[in-house]
Length: 321
Image (cartoon, rainbow, N blue to C red; front, top):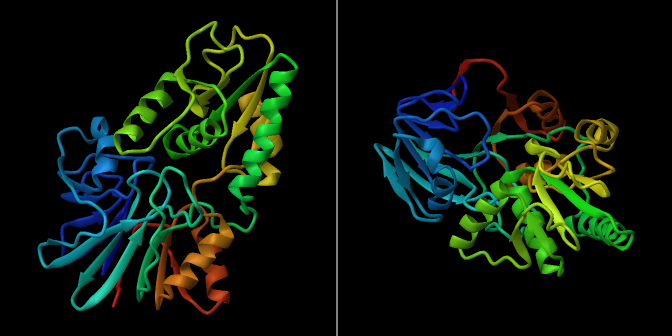
């Protein structure tokens, strides 16, 4: 059985998946899981633990690399890549002769900073569907970067400073990697720059990156975190602002107003609706349990395709087998 209550508990064990409350033992799927309360013990990839080491606090942290089976009591487990950001992982569980896979966010597209997602067939799938609504159909990354390049080149040629706002974890790193490889000189906000330095510890190379310092914006593309907004670049009068954010077309106007942006670029490092469907079809589970804001709608879409899909939306206990 599983218990769903601010995380998912595999009953009969001490193991939780992405618990949002203090638990005895929690698997952490990636460094950008949002709400986070340190558990007594946590398990994740070495990369994820490095990225969240300040948030883990006094938890006993167990680092497990990809594709290396291990044991938790009577449970056999293995972490496999999920493709969202450095260290992001799914966990495959063998319990009582049955196999379960839990994944937080998944990404089936090519990333320049993450291990490609590994897709395994499994009879029981528990997954997060952050963008499980049909309105979230993200364009190819290369197409978004081409549009971004046009925006940047136009801004620079007119004497304006291009300022790009992106979510710090994962997406900003992907953006910096792609723009640096394209030859742009980048001025990076200190919080994103600190993450870039950690990514470099993992063997990821970045080009053209410098820590942004005031009055050193000329000829550079500035990359700042969404949460900071335009704080730190208020003194730059002539700037063009691009919000690089996972978004649907009908959210564009709202995002522009919210972040003071001139343009919105829907770059994504997480699966949109179509890729989520593709992932489930590739795993071919007998039963799917879903978490996330769009779990009910996504469950309905899967049911229409013949899957037994159950949205997890309120605290409950369910029989897995």
